[in-house]
Length: 342
Image (cartoon, rainbow, N blue to C red):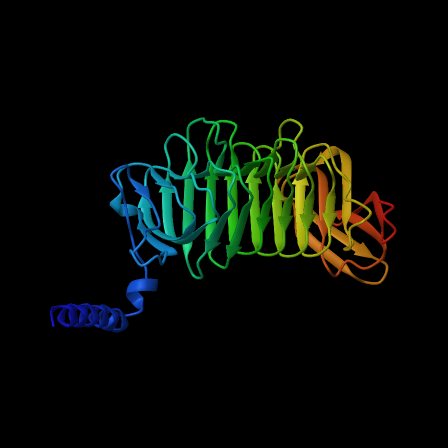
């Protein structure tokens, strides 16, 4: 009898545990969980059942010091913060920016210090502001040692105020922009891939750059596949709208890039027509520019800075001869678009 009673008790306990598990809301297993350890590190946490929480909420108003994300996963971030967000993880980290204001006084606003991929998603209808200051090895307002991807439909305003700092920067790794409205102001380059490899690719979104250095600077290549790109580069020194080591390829989208020197001709492999040129003397800020062909097509714009180099491309730029007009007067510059003889 004792043995039978013992078996019955065990069976009842097991059935009770199973019943409790079945009655637990699924949200407890798959919901959002926030965890901060004594070192101020945000981590994914284990609920004891072996199920890993994949999303963490970070409200920046709750933190008084730098935040370090040490585990891969997806993080929803909002709020105002006067320090930095550092990432030291061995797996992909996704940051969903949803109304974020980060003002770092000494280094990057967001710095991925590991080789893992960093994905920044700009949540729909959100406006996010990032500002950095100081001087550090993390020389971008957004910096990543790993591959950096920016996606989403929200707005991202970047102010790169570090000494010799970029707006967005990586070292030996790729930068890919798929979406969002991104406004960059920087003390040096707007978007920079340093080191010996890595490329910059724009597939979509609207990117506006106002840089004291090069607008876009890649030690690898730059590829424009879609979206809108508007670039103002520095008026002093050898700066240009787009500068690369391995070439510029324009396959789609809208591009306007002003520079002061060192015009780089896009590659012949580009799938979309472009106009690019360099002049001996500056064309002054505020000048009315017009490109027109013999078929009545015309594109007009106003020079937003004085410049010597210029790259323009959009899907409507058909083959043929084009002429540059400045303030209504035809210049000596003509372009045979479509033959790559420009």
